[in-house]
Structures are given as C-alpha cells and as structure tokens.
Image (tube, rainbow, N blue to C red):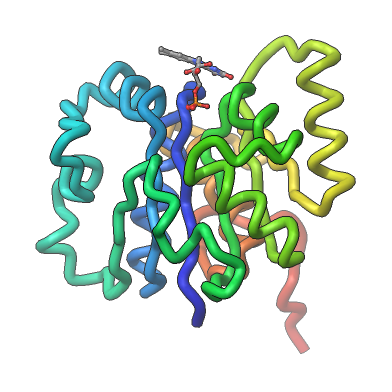
Length: 206
Ligand SMILES: Cc1cc2nc3c(=O)[nH]c(=O)nc-3n(C[C@H](O)[C@H](O)[C@H](O)COP(=O)(O)O)c2cc1C
C-alpha cells in the first residue's frame, strides 16, 4: 500500500481533517501531512488546539496518537515550504492526495499550477502523474472565479468533493456529519471504512 498525502489548508472544517487522519492511521495507512499557516490558524480557532508552528507534531492534532492501539499507520509532517520533501517529486510513489479542507486560495493556486508551496506542488505532481487528487472545498456562496477554478481542476482530473454532508442518513450529531464527508473521501482513496451506513443493499442475501 502506497503512502497517502493529506494537506490541511485554511478553510473552515478542521474537524474533517482530524477525522480523516484518524481513519487513515487506524486503517494502517502511512500519511504525509502538510498544513498551511492558515490551516494551523483555523485549527486553533475551530478545535481549540494550540498549534505551535515551530514545533508542529501529530500529537497536537491527535492527542491519543502515540497510545493508539488501533492505528498502525504513521504520519510524517512536512513543512509547507519544504520543496525537498519526497512528495514534491513525481518519482515518489503515493496512493493519492486529499486537500481537506481546501481553501479558495489553495484551489486557485493548484488550478493555475502555481506551486508556491509544498501543498500546491504535491497537488500539481498528483495531477501530472495522473494520480488521485481529492479536493474538499468549503466556501459558500461560490463566485464565478471559484467555480471556474473547480471546473479547471475537475477537467485536469481532480475529484472535487465539497464538504457537503448528506442528511439522508438522519445524522444525530456533528460527528455524523463529519463522518459522512470523510467516508466519501476514503471511498475515493480506496481506504476501507464503515463510518456511515451506505444507501441501498450492496450485499444481497442469496
Ligand atoms: C477562521 C477562518 C475561517 C476561514 N474559512 C475559510 C473558508 O471556509 N474557505 C476559504 O476559502 N477560506 C477561509 N478562510 C480564509 C483562508 O484561511 C485564507 O484565504 C488563507 O489565505 C488560505 O491560505 P491557504 O490556502 O494557504 O491555507 C478562513 C480563515 C479563517 C481565519
């Protein structure tokens, strides 16, 4: 199983990112994590987690990470300016990348191939190598520039997976809503999960 790349940018919805990391690690997947400075700011605001950018570690996001018995996956954190990281190169094999949540700023940069930080560059690499790139935008309402950037990325092969939880499973909590979106991301990454009940009967009894 190849490593996965997760990028957290400064859109609202840090809870999606934390849950996604938990699920990937519990599924035994190794993750390369990059968090933009705005992403760190939003995590601090939304989750009340004190992120120390100078000494950022996975335990700051997942306090139980070290003691987690379920998780066999490992998380390697890369500085968002470190273009020498493996994930900046197409020769580094991965099983896909998710930008979750994805700000409109990062969406614009990736759609235009700017590669101004490691998140943009890794996303660019996934597109050029024809690997799975899942973009989880969070903004409303959407303007024409943002919609146009999403269309550009979708045409380039990215999966645009907005943080839009469905309500047909009768969610009872914020966790249910978060799990809905994370389940869709995992499906795209090919990571098995049972976070939500699937619609329809997929295992028909004989
Ligand atoms: C609390 C907070 C919430 C934000 N929510 C969003 C959002 O939902 N969508 C968005 O595109 N930008 C949002 N922003 C603005 C981005 O963080 C800002 O555009 C930033 O430049 C994005 O940088 P990045 O793409 O490098 O992370 C938010 C900022 C803050 C402080």
